[in-house]
Structures are given as structure tokens and as C-alpha cells.
Length: 452
Image 1 (tube, rainbow, N blue to C red):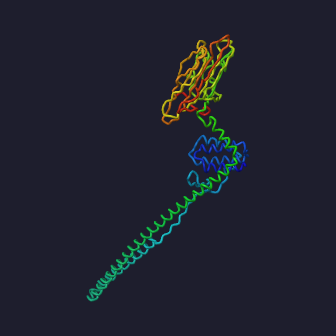
Image 2: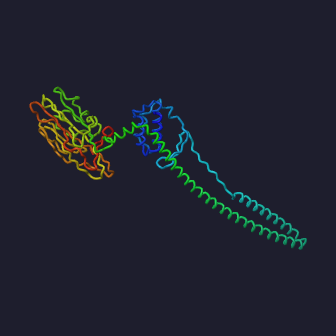
Image 3: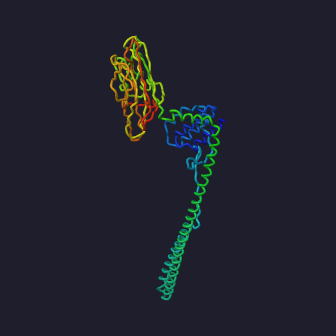
């Protein structure tokens, strides 16, 4: 069963992967399948298949990091294995695969029915012969001229011979010219015929290749479907994820933080702010600090808002706490941090119904921020600010993928018989997002400034 899973993974990434993300999804699907436990050797084999799948697409640093983290010394022999070259089809393309230890070479056989180079050699030889004949005639003429003083008749005979030789030479040259023209004509005709034959053969080869691709694609598809049948557990897991927030960005997901500031003897953590959004505990409950005043770096938000929460779109009770008061110094803060994506190209208004507590008389405020902008000032609720609907503008960008940071922060109420309470509640249908808005849970990975 394990070997079948590895083969199915390799067939899947070769035939169906359309991006580096598909490669990673298929790899995690095999590695986390509780129905198919893997040996160390099979984990290494799966990692090599994952690497080859990534090689089909542009470099992706995040996916390469997964390879680095999952690799180990025991996997070294598997990276050195050299497989035989293969030809396959994927995504309607023909692909040739070969390990980097092998070479790829192409050879072409060219035939030629008439050699122009041989004809040129013959012409050159004839011209050399002509030069030799000319030189011989010159020599004979010179000899005849030397004899002219002795006899005029010999001179006339010599002139007659010279005239005859010149005429014969001209005839020879004309004949040779005719042969060259015929050779050129024959060569052109042969080349045209060869080109025509090549075009016909190439068209037929394309048709044959297309037919072969159709048959091969169906064969591969049938083989992959057959191999994937045993992985019922993985299919069930994927089907189950479709109904969760991992597949539905309209399901509310957010981060929660809840903290006291004072223990009646000293301020928490030496009254330093790094663990509390970059703001000292004394400033939270004696200085009316707000959410928009937290340090402008996601690392401070991720350190404070450590609890991941989900809720129904009908609403969510984040905090509903009561504690005994021994002085006005201590307070209980409660916050909810949302990451909201605007998939459109224009600003969308979101007005979630909410209830918060605060008492600025003792230096404790209620506040809301969108990307570091103060939305409600230092709100004093005295006890409860119930069912407020503050309008929050969620900005967009031209790419339709801008993500905003929205934070709601409540402090403690006015005391009643030495008891105080802290509430942060989202009311009826408050967490149903308008069109073009989606929930995102990326606080574990996002970096840099959040005030934009």
C-alpha cells in the first residue's frame, strides 16, 4: 500500500500538477496520510519526487524551503539515483525528462542526390586544362614566328592551325557552359523535390504524434485513476476540508489576546512593552492607550495575539469576564485582530455590530483601528457600549488582493461593589462580510509594517 501511494504521488505530480503549489499539496497529502505510514526510505523517495515536480515550474523560495527542511543525511543516496530518460505528456504537452548526469543529443541524416561540390571539382579541372592548352598554343605560335623568316608557307600553316585550335577551344568552352547550366538546373529540381518530400513526411509525423499523444494521455489518466483508488483516506480528508475555513474564506477566523497589567505589587514583565504590542502595561490601564498606538511591526502583533479563533457569521463572544478589584491600577484588556482581504478594486464599508467595555476615568479606553488609523478615538463606555456599528472602510488596490489589519480592543468597566467586567462581543450577523471581502489567517507568516 505504501509503494502504491508513492507511485500514485509520482504519477499525480507528473500528469496533473499545474503549479509549484500543486506539487506541495500532493507531497503533503502523501506525507500526512495516516492510513499509509511511510518508512524513512519512502519519505526520501517522496521528497525526490516533490523536487522533480518543482523543477517543472518557476523557482519558488517558500517551496524550496520545504525541501531544505524535510531533507536529511539519510536521504543523500536517493538524490544520487540516476533514472532512465523518459518521454511523457502532461497538461497537453510532450515532456522529455532526463537526470542531470545524462546527456541529450540529436542526430540528423542528410541525403543529397547530386553533389554540387563534385561538379565544381570537374569544372576546375577543365579550366586548368584550358589554361594548359592556351599556354601550348602560345608556345607553338612563338615557334612559328621564329620560323617565319625562313618560310612564309610555314607561317600560313601555323596561323591556320592556330585559328582551328581557337575555334575548337571556343566550341569546348560553349559545350562546358551548357553542361554547367544543365547541372544547376538539375540540382535546383532535386532540392525542390527533396523539400517537398520532407514537408510531406513532417506533416505525417505531426499527425502520427498527435494520435499517439491522445492514446498516451488516456492511458496515463486511466493508470493514475486506478492507482489513486486505494487512497480513500486522503480523499475523505480533502472532502472534509472543503467545509472548513481552509476552503471557505467567508468563515470568520481571527486572533484573540487577553491580558491583565498589574498584580498589586508590580507591573507585569517589569513594565516593558514588547510582550504587549509594544506598549507598557502601565500605559494600557493608566494611560488610555489605543490599538492604533501599538508598534508598527507585525512581530509585536503576532507575539500578543497568539490565540486563533473561529466563529459563526451570526456573531462571536470573544471576552465576557468579571474579576475582583483591589485597586484602580489593574485592568483586563481584551482584543480581536482580523486580517481582511478586499478582492475588488474599490473600498468596501464594513459595519459589524459590537459591544465593548471601558472606563477612561481610570485611564482605560476602548478603541478600533484599520491599518493603524484611529477609528473611534479614546472611547469611554463607563460600563458597556452596546450594539455599536462603527463604519470601517476596507481599502482596495488595482490587483484586487489588498489585505488590511483590523483590531478591536476593549478595557475594563466602571467598578460595581469592587467587581469589574471586560466584554468584547460581536452581535447578530456581525461577522458576515460584504461582497468582495474575505477572512485571511496569515499572522504566522506576514512580516513588516502593518500601518499602511
